[in-house]
Amino acid sequence: MNTLFFLILSILALVLLWKYHIEREKGYRNAINGLNYQHDKQIQLLKDHHIQCYPQEWIQSLPTRFYESEIAVEIKFVFPLLMYLGYSPDEVKIRYPVTVQAGTQSIDCTADWIVKRKSEKMIIEVKSPNVSLGDSVKRQARSYAYALGISKYIITNGRQIIVVERGVERDREILNLKVEEFEQEWNTIKNILGQFS
Image (tube, rainbow, N blue to C red; front, top):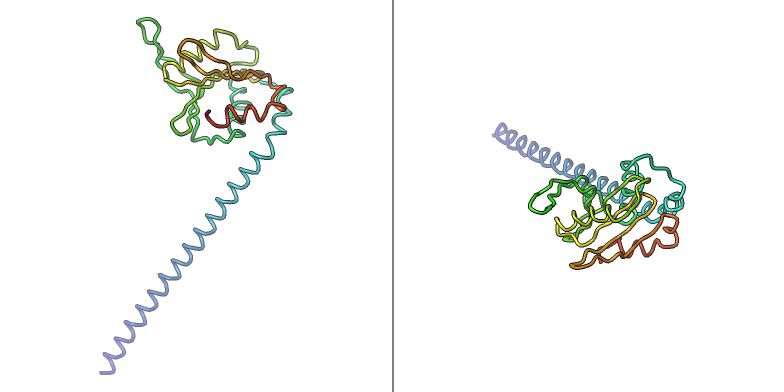
């Protein structure tokens, strides 16, 4: 009888230890998840702080920035602009394939940037700083926008930004600024590009 009692007591002790170990493990996991949550929250707060506090410094540096190529304009101008306007990297597609109709022929092209928020999209066509944002650049961006069914397109060379709403008969330029005007027009830029209107 004592052996059976000792065996039952041993099994009960093992079950309790096993249960204690599982609960302790859950506690550790919950603590780690709590730390991960706090870490993610702090990163988001720092990101939000950066987006709110540092665009001023970036904007003020724009007139004196040097861009050696189209890629430099994309990295030093377009990407920060989108981040300061509140877009996440997940809302941006780079080198987006586009098929443009030219008469009876289809031409495969590549749009520099597509920005998508919810169901709305806009195209950004980027040029080198020494390229003028004339009619040919507008036609190129418009053809991509038309092919993709996108109503808003942007062209920039890092020195100037033009935002156009594509219309049926005529397009409407809704923003045309040189970077020297960004500081005084930042709220206008945010209203036009910070959210789709």
